[in-house]
Length: 110
Ligand SMILES: [Zn+2]
Image (cartoon, rainbow, N blue to C red; front, side, top):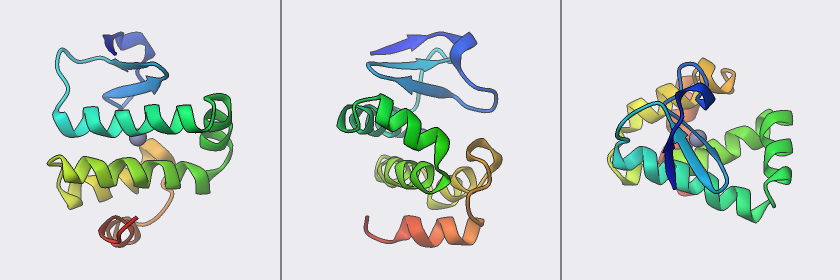
């Protein structure tokens, strides 16, 4: 369920997913972003939410793995490879990899 709640959305992000909700500061989200956040909903169920939260916030490697999986889906739903690589390598996630590394990882089958 998508809920408009600007106070919950981190700066420079358009949405945050906390199972079972996708919180956003926008009136409408593009399809690729909804599908991206739905990947995080599935990840949170798979890792029983608390496991997801611990891995996501305590391990850069796991955060990258979760986001890589979500951005591969974003691309399938219309986000460009360049835009996904820009976000994935950017400050929103703590500059986990270079943009060219992100681009390479996104292009590989996951
Ligand atoms: Zn994400």
